[in-house]
Amino acid sequence: MKQKIVAVYDSKAGFYMNPIVVKSIGEGERSFANEVNNPQSMLCRNPEDFGLYLVGEYDPITGIIIPEQQPKQLLLALPLKKADLSPAH
Image (tube, rainbow, N blue to C red; front, side, top):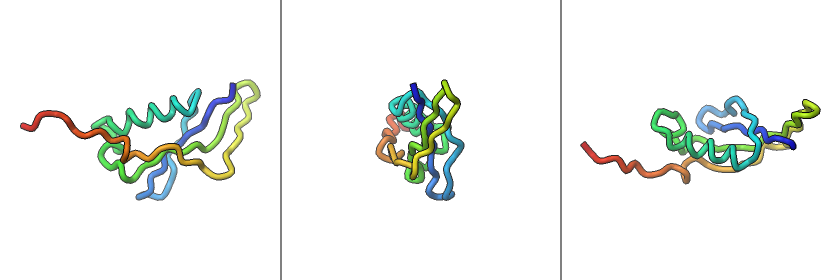
């Protein structure tokens, strides 16, 4: 089964972060959404700057990487950001 290669694009910096290999697009989307809502994450602090992109596929049987012709946008961080529901001090 081919795996997906996804990367986060930082629009302020103008580059893609190091890609990761996931078993499915859904797994990559879930990981991205979790990071967007992790208070320790740069994605959480500046969600307007980040998006998740599909950049290719990886075949673990042959070791071949098949790039996308153009990165395909999967998600933007800002709509995934949950409101801070912690009580005010």
